[in-house]
Image 1 (cartoon, one colour):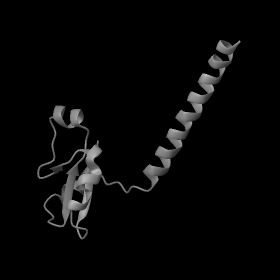
Image 2 (cartoon, rainbow, N blue to C red):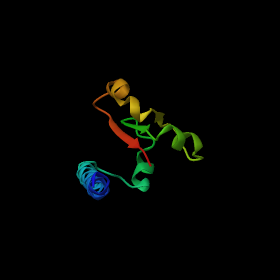
Image 3 (cartoon, rainbow, N blue to C red):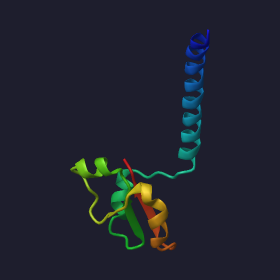
Length: 96
């Protein structure tokens, strides 16, 4: 009896968790402005723009494409480096 209840409840709980993650992701993405690669190209030589490459270690390491002049920072250590950058600059975080 307990095994049957658990096998019924498990998929429901998993579905609710996945739904919650999707909702949170959707709301988080709405508040983050995005720019196209064409727009980013026009910003590359601007001294008021700092490009931060925050891809995960494996994604960054295995990528053949790196943005010239980008500063590499590990996203998991955000709290340790976030205050290093001037507030009067435009920060572009590259994570794709």
